[in-house]
Amino acid sequence: LEGIRMTQEGKDRVSVTGVKGKAPPTTTKVGLTAKGGYQAEFHYYLCGIDLEQKAEWTERQVRKSMGRNAERFSCLKFTLNGYSPDDPRNQDVATADLRVFVQTKDRSLVIKDSLEVPGFNRWCMENFLQSCPGATIENDIRQSAGKKSYEYWAALIPQSEQIDIAPSSKCDLYKAGQWSYETKGPVALGSFGPTTRGPLGWVVLGRSGDKASDANVGFFVRRDDEWDWLRSLLTTPKMKQLLGPEYNGKEVDRF
Image (tube, rainbow, N blue to C red; front, side, top):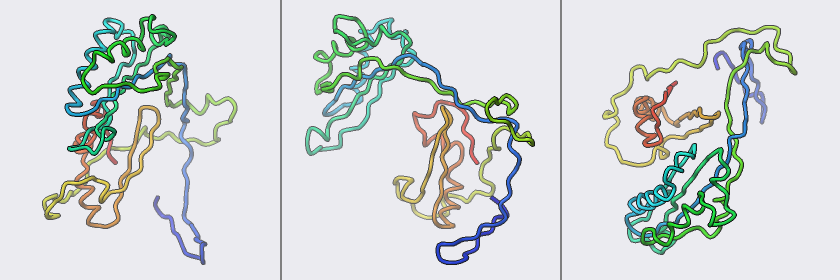
């Protein structure tokens, strides 16, 4: 975005000049969707103290019921969502959701026609009454029945392989991706004075998006001194730290 000029021509009227484009790349983006199999989920509600320990307890029970069948799931994930604050005002506030999520290509594992059929629904349900104190289950367990799932990939193909839409008569070959770099001339964070622990969103605004397993996020602030602080704070290692347990070891690019 260089060389662009914007001029106020009148009320609600702005002239934009100097916009120049480039030839399209020699490749084009495509999205591929395919049948992935089946997915299902089961929810326990855990109430009171020691929620993480209760979630671990319940997970061990469900995994034991599954036995080696757990290996037949392409995805088996236990997630504790929420927490109980100190001195909660009622039972609802003291309750968190333990979500058990599975994906598989074997539909027989997620059939919910009957508890007599060994499968995901039964392995979760049979551990309910013998589970940890303060546990209950969701009222509507239809989610534990397998539903079709789909997989999505983003990819590049040569412009010349297009069938329905003819490629541009002129294409240029560009380097894949942008260059990743750290801030040049960062400012010492201690120079900004005393700090108060709080959400990044007190100062910084953001916008994110994704394409399949690739995600991006942009950050922006309102004032010059906030910008110096932000560009010095958000290094690549800091981004990985902020992602916490969600960071899976893959590449993080910074622009």
